[in-house]
Image (cartoon, rainbow, N blue to C red):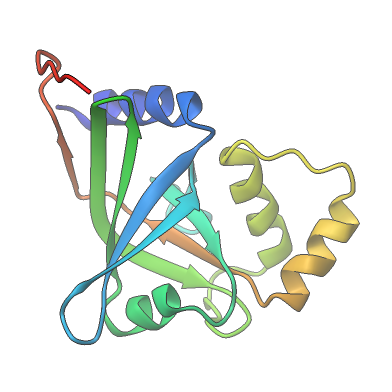
Length: 155
């Protein structure tokens, strides 16, 4: 599967499921840490590459995990069809300043929009993001995995 094919599949599956995905990180004990997140596709603000992105509250296990082991997997699904993207993760937030990202509020807005969000008051959105110490997670996919198109499953 080419990266373009993978991104097309992610877009199709994510749109069908309100941009919900499962984020898998590695806990300090080596076990997986799993969270359900809203995630979207956007251009990395530094590299210009296509990334998968989501936002996390400031003090969460997923951020602790990513600070120690900055790799993750995002899994998107609809019905029995799924696709995962794995790769390194860049963090950008008040507790994880990124030296090349100057406009965190705009990045958080961009991720929110890419993940299907629409907010009637962006000033309020920015205030809540600051208060929650929200952090951007930018996954740079290096590997995609999916089930075959021909797979048939029964519920």
